[in-house]
Length: 270
Image (cartoon, rainbow, N blue to C red; front, side, top):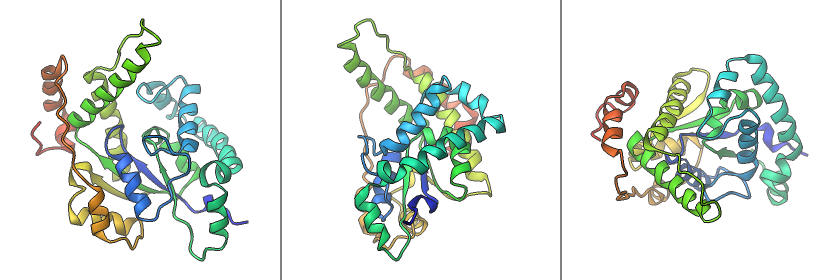
């Protein structure tokens, strides 16, 4: 039986709330299978769980990952994590990610199946996944910090209010400054990855997705025959009128004076 996972995947990389869900849907339209059993954020449960469990056992989370990043400085640690994940991938990917229908279809297909997955946590685990998928193709997406942080803030606030019904003593801990720290750490990794010559990668900005040139680059990157108009229909820039939370002006000043922000978004007016 052919092994689908022998074909190196597309990895969609970006910070939380940066457009990775949209990119996953675009990839599906372009003929890239992104997994069965996806959650509401278009993340295949199989890889989402692997990333989440790896962070958790190393005393880290999707937003608090300093401990894990420090451990990644040790090559032995990377190899150990990769070995553990590879065993699970080899054992369960066919049934848990692809599913029997996709496997049967692939057995009789002449062309190699294109597949990949998205989960912001993959950015943190990238050195580990690169040990398993050495020739993975990387789609790197950036989004401006104000939109990202506001989206994270209200996304987490919604989750908090739902949990508050059962846990009235719970405190809301996601402030705009916390979200900005997450954006900074992810963006540093993404910048370093985008500048590396070791990858087959495409870098885009969320703000540029509606441009024909960018859409065409995505189609070529996914080796798709999809019409640019089909992709363009999926890209609708939403402007959400978020209410400015307490501390917004202080946060905005922090963003405007940040060296990394000015490097990635030098011409933006926030």
